[in-house]
Length: 175
Image 1 (cartoon, rainbow, N blue to C red):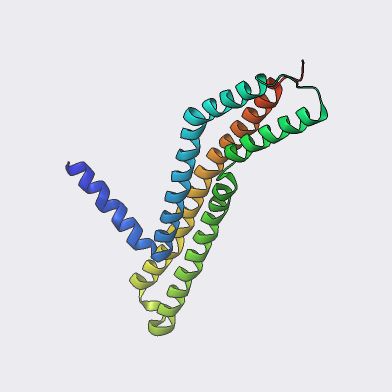
Image 2: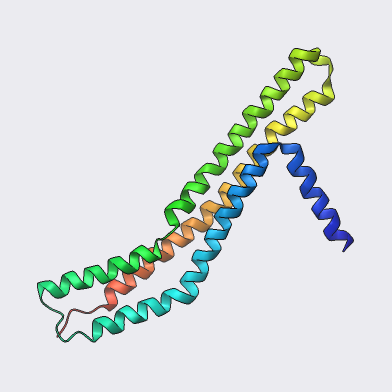
């Protein structure tokens, strides 16, 4: 239990030393990971059922060669594709937002350093170090969040493309 308390205090100190932008980055990363987990769970649980339902509906059609049948097939695939790709663009936006928020934190931290220098000269090293810390921690937090998100959103996009391709291939046009 002591270990958990120490870790909580370390995270709290880290968040405080980075300023308000680190809290915004943390919120962005939390939402991003929440959506990533939701997509992973959807792909694992709901998507196989959805694909099976679409396949059964297609196979139940008595005729699959006409122009109308082709359009119905395209519509069925497009509807699945919408569900498969849901949230992916938003997750990509959150990934891109992380380093931008980190950069904004860097700028606000450097402004703090310059304010300290303007008020007390360059002699107040402790206040300058606090400002430099507030400038570098958001950058690091934003980059770590973006890197973790880039990997996972790439995996999710590949999975989405593969599932849609497999669905299109499995809806045969014979009969």
